[in-house]
Image 1: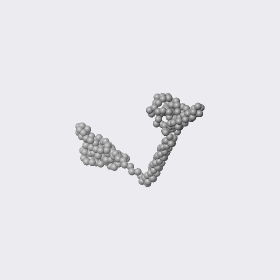
Image 2: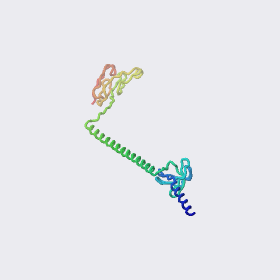
Image 3: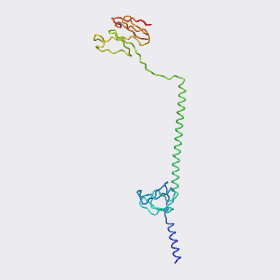
Image 4: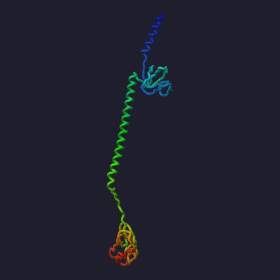
Length: 222
């Protein structure tokens, strides 16, 4: 009788040992919960590569038991049938991270070459342009003297003033005459007393340039 019991117990243990479904964790850290679902409390954790016993499945969740005797539910997708799958997953992770590192290094090298190119191009462009003066384009406004031979008004501007009715004495139009470019030498008309500063002797223009229907008679002031 005892012999039969011993054989039966041995067979049950053997069946249990070979009939257990072992799984391996394929993610870095996996939470073990009280029930099948994320709303259940976390009762523990297992790490990547840990071997667990799969007791049952409930939808996308598997009830497991750890080697320390902790029982609970984990997401089935984070369990692998063999340890080789876990190792291959680790290998893929390492390969992915190595590719990221390689791309990062190439990026740094490219950025360094770009900065070096800009540095030397700026250096040589600066040295090549040092032999010649930079080209400066400017538009200078030239002022000229304008004198009305009717009312004696004297103004300086860049172009001939516009005429409008009632702008001069006796409700008439100005009769503007160009006396020349504004300068730093003083000239005075002996007839009308007009004083202007020009670079050369002011022009006499035509009749009606001076008051009294006449020409200016300019003299240089000391």
